[in-house]
Amino acid sequence: MIDKIKVLVLNQSYEPLHVCTAKRAIILLFSGKAQRVEDSHRVISAPSLIVVLPSVIRLNRYIHRPLKYTLAFNKKNILKRDNYTCQYCGRNSGEKLTIDHVLPRSLGGRTIWENVVSACRACNLRKGNKTLQESNMELLRLPTRPLSPLHLTLAAYSLQAAEGWQKYLAYNPSGLSAVWSGPRERSIL
Ligand SMILES: [Zn+2]
Image (cartoon, rainbow, N blue to C red; front, side, top):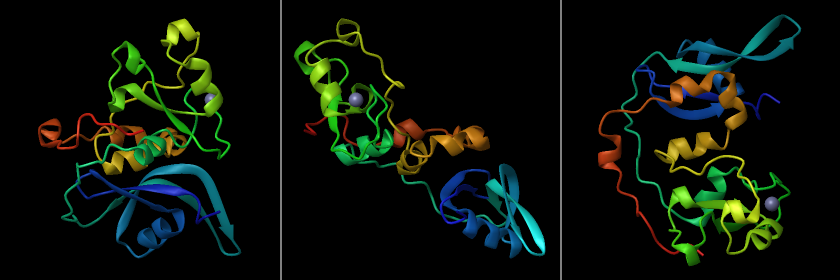
């Protein structure tokens, strides 16, 4: 279990750095390399001690590792952003997902992060070349462009995000949008 639970790791500056396992986080805490910032609701117990698992930790030393902002716009990353879940019916059955244009291309919908979502074949077929309104379908959440590869990874852990991650993910150094250099639009299908 401790290998499956994810912990958000912040730099000394509180900038999100990466995600590690709870096991790794405990090692960092006990070796004095990090401190606890937010607790999770999970507890593990061994014969001689009880440990509340952290949800967010912060490194004691500043790590010079600039965030990478270049994020490839492709099917693999769209599926990852959507946590491999159909954004219409919420199914995550492991079946091969398709990419759906929320506003269909035939109606001028563009192939950009904000207009594409993961969809199961049945939902994609049902929606067809219709708008959301015409098809009477709803999205689980609005598609957005992840700020960076790190944010893409974090988007997949939305459950943990409820456990105190959210306020740290808002970290957005000034000029972030200016350095964005990913492709804006291209064919992904
Ligand atoms: Zn579906």
